[in-house]
Image (cartoon, rainbow, N blue to C red):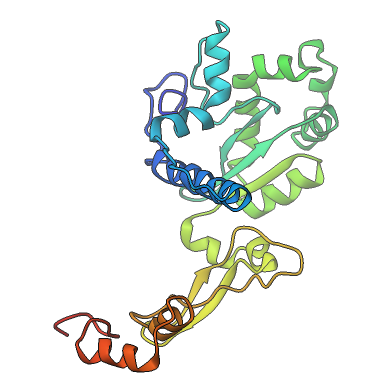
Length: 254
């Protein structure tokens, strides 16, 4: 993944250690599958998950292409399925808009928006492959158009022309993102220790299920629920454990 990340004329870039969460997700999926097998057969199994195999699974497209003789290469913000495609500077400091032209209709709309309807008559630009070959030329035209516009204005105009576009948002701007707000992704949590704060919700929705997230539990909050309901201890036994400080609701020494 590092080899495939970066610009064609630059070095490979390590994309912030994505292998760690990827390996965790694969291991969790494997564990859930093993539990299903256990429930169906009555037999447990050992699950083994390696980080490098999980990473190669995510990078399968590049691995398969390499196996068939195509050398993987870095291509910056460009990718298969859209052309032109990239991230372009807008008015102001470090403000950008992402753009992907995914079909011929969007290409014609973009050319009109740039005031270059003549480009639609060029035989070499009538296909995605042709536009990809002319990516540097088209990127320069798009950048000259975006650099004088605010990101939101550029996004609105690009979308109205039929192109897929979105502003590149800084982390703090995501807290007010209208799409995430409409999805109910950000949720206000009231915690007995940490107080009230904004937290990310579930990144998926299930029909008929409550998508709200609960505050993180405090230490020992569910001692009685787990020890009586799951392990079958009596209230007296739990009181004895608490008296001997085997369990508690505060870290030892505090």
